[in-house]
Image (cartoon, rainbow, N blue to C red; front, side):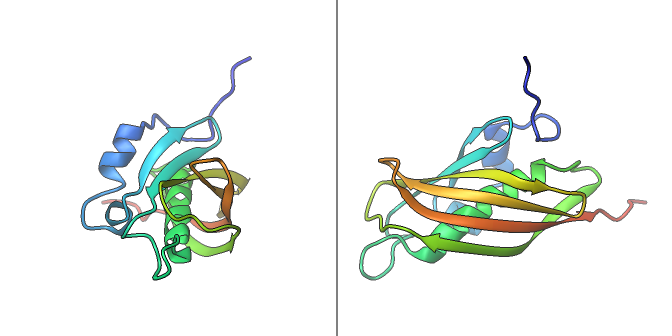
Length: 149
């Protein structure tokens, strides 16, 4: 049995890491890198280092949200026909479960709802040891591109 993908068209990690996570923007500054693409999920990692910790030496909650929104936005953008539609974030929330002091955190985005005008994504962030660090829910609007002349 063949499982079809929710993602539209061909998508590779190289294409995403080169054309979606670019120099001068937040995801690149924080060291976020896309690491996996499945039939219905995408994964990314982010270092826990001087760029992503808070003053007491643990992962900053805002950095967790930046990771969640990055992997969620990229996944959502490939779950629509990119020639005719684009997505924009509407709402994101998070529950911070446990602190992380070093290594990497790994985020997995899976869809809860893929509608014509909105999408809702579940993002789970785990430590290198596989322990749950943060859970996030991310909602995007799906918008129609203006016709080109």
